[in-house]
Image (tube, rainbow, N blue to C red; front, side, top):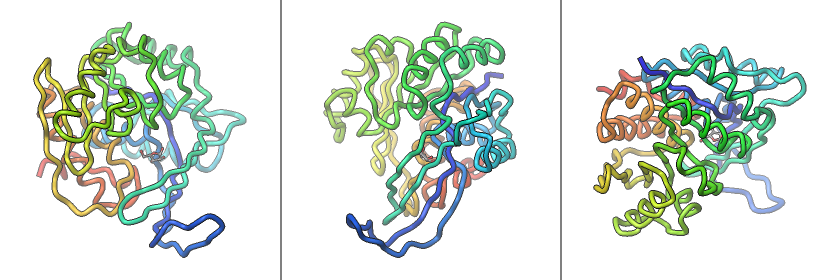
Length: 300
Ligand code: RIB
């Protein structure tokens, strides 16, 4: 069976709900403080593992309480952490998250997420990956490491999925190493200068990213679902209608479940449908990894 191998960030999320966002110099009352495992990479790995995919994590944490907790929780969710490095001197990544009216604002301290170099990722991939496995990464680790790791994975015959979040440019020469590019509206605008909204602008943005070299592009559109190409054809999958309490990790859930479905050889359309349902369930719950649903919840 194909494995999902995620190279990415692990953060301890410190989340607090607030009635309104404070102005400069102001303090407001918050509630429901939550310290919970997150990080885009970790969340994507957990989403794939909770769906049942054999999942391996390539990451780096510090030798501190947060690092240990993150590893314990990933292992509880059956993510293989044998290739996670423990840094002797760096601090584990931390995300400070404020949730307001179901939406979030995040400040990140990357810490050890920036320690791994392309050589480290290569060494692990040569040890654990096989052609056809799925390689998933995002932009919360060091930019060159991420880009070079896509190249390494692609050249090893893996299927590469890239989520350029937080939004940063993808140098054109790296598009050729991306099999499936998954972007939200902001990330798509960052790459193409087109804000995809209705069908026409989505079409233009997808075309632009395909012209740069991405084989397959999915744009997630929040409450409007997602749109993607299959060859030259465009398909739209509507979002599930639900009440959001916390959108943290919704995009990560989408990507992890998508990768898990593709690892089972489901086609892209069906995979996007599963991923959409999973992401919808995540936003009905507070937190990141703890909010991500198991397969049996998605399949009801
Ligand atoms: O995508 C959500 C994640 O972004 C959070 O878990 C937080 O750690 C930030 O990295």
